[in-house]
Every structure is written in C-alpha cells, then in structure tokens.
Image (tube, rainbow, N blue to C red; front, top):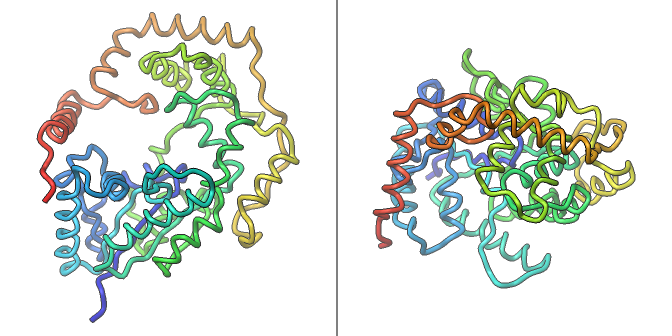
Length: 367
C-alpha cells in the first residue's frame, strides 16, 4: 500500500521563508481546495508562528518536554493524510539542526547533522516524503546571515571574520547529500530564480498549486543596509548593548528616519575582494551545476563606516529614540519584533503571550 504524500519545505534560511509561511497559513482553504493540507501547529505546540519550527526544534532534543506533543502531532498528520492528497510542512530549522554532543570538528558536525536527519526520517516514516529546498547563492546568503547575526546574537567582529565561520552551513553539496541519504526525493530551486516571478507565486508553482490572487511578497522582511550593519556591529563591540537597546537600534535602522544616515540602497558590498568571494563560492558550491544560480556580478566597492559617520548615527538614533519613546515602549510591551513595521492589536499580542505562558508553565509530561 502506497504511503501518503508529504511535502517538507526545509528552507533554507533567508529565502523568503517567513513570507511563504504567512501566505500558506493565510490561504489554508485555497490549499485544501487543491488537495494540500497545511496543518496549524498552534494547538500542539502553543506556537506563535504558523510555521512548524517547534517540531524541527523538538526533533533536535529527543526525550525533551515536547516529546508527547511531537507524537500527538504525528498522529494528527497520519489522520489528516486520510482526507487530503498531500500534507505540507514548512520550517527552515530543518536545514541546520544537529543532535547536540560534546564532539567538535567537521567530522563530528557531519555525524551530528546525520543523526538529526535520521531523527527526521524516523518521524516521517509513515509518509512518502519529498524534501523542498530553496537555496540562495552562497555569497549573498552569507551576507544575509552576517546581518542576521549582528542583530540577533552577541556576534561582533566584522564580515571577513564571519565568513570563516560559515563554510559548513554553506557546503551545499554535502547538505543535499545528507538529506538524500534518508529522503531520496528532493526538489531544488534557487532563491534568485524565484525573485523574478515573486517568492510566493514561485513557491506555489513548486508545490503544483496555482497561486491565489491575493498572494504577494509585500511582507518580505526588509534587510539592513550595509552601513547600518556596520554601525550595529561596531555598537555591540565590547558587549555594551543590552537586548532592548540593540532592538531599538535595529528598528531605527529600518525606519525612514534613518535614511539620511544609512541611505536606502547599497551601492557598496561587504566582500573585501573578488578573489575572496570567488574562493568562497567555489568551496561552497563544489560540483553543483554551474547554471543553478545566476552569474555573479562585478563586485562593488567594500562598504565603510567612519568614526564621524558612527557618531552621527548614534546622535540621530538618540534623538529619534527620545522623540518616539512611547511608541517604542508599546512595541516592547507587545513584544513586536524589530523588523516588523506594523503594530499588532493588543488582543492578538495578549493571546500570543498567554499561549507562550501556558507552554512554559504547564508542559505536557513525556509519556
């Protein structure tokens, strides 16, 4: 008897995943009319996201507090498969998670990654699972990862130092092969090709469903300019910033008030030389087809941010912070992410807070 079909969108990161997941959650009836079921994880994990991140995280922590929820969620998927042609899950942490251990080095990381994918394969054993993987060209991907590290971690040290840390995650041939060992059916697309058609329509085409008329890419997360990134990296040097100050600076870097300081479009890059970029690409891409990604463009001059520019940015931020203190405090009370330009209603934020509190205060026991 044939197994029920399941589509597992594993990212990767920085390929419009949040926009895609918002579109999937907002169009569940449309998807079901076309035979695709996109399950809501919130009743099972008390998640605030419509993506399936909590499942991906739980599989990296076997025997943890979410074990019972994981089993109940799989039971739900098995039951749902009786009523739908295909099930679709989406969570980019599936692309990067490893089973923790005390070992270090490349071979140890390979073993930890292989162990995690084995855990995935066990969970999805009842299904005929197809991996959906969208990859971004490594040189722009690592730039985006660096910007994310600056605003979401204590990292400081500049781009050149950061890229030396990123080779393992961006070894695409190895990553693909590790998936293929357990999931032979993999559909690959490049992020850059999707940009031409629109991220959401391109993804719906990938799963064989016509895009709904309301689907668009309006919610793509706005990226920091290079100058704003260098300002934030330098601001964190020495661990001077608390989380609140960092988040306020991150939000400031995205609002129109910061445009005179950081500009609106990058006419510079982060790579120090064409040679270092091309070496990184060769190492990351290995034997992947040469035409999978669009050709690399001529390298722009490297971004700089002088002492005077840094001081001016600090002054502009402090003036903006003083003028918008009430607005900022309300965002913080509602736990609005710095990259969000809109403000959720108080009711929506309260419901999210209650769900998060329930998950922490009364976790279901492992069976």
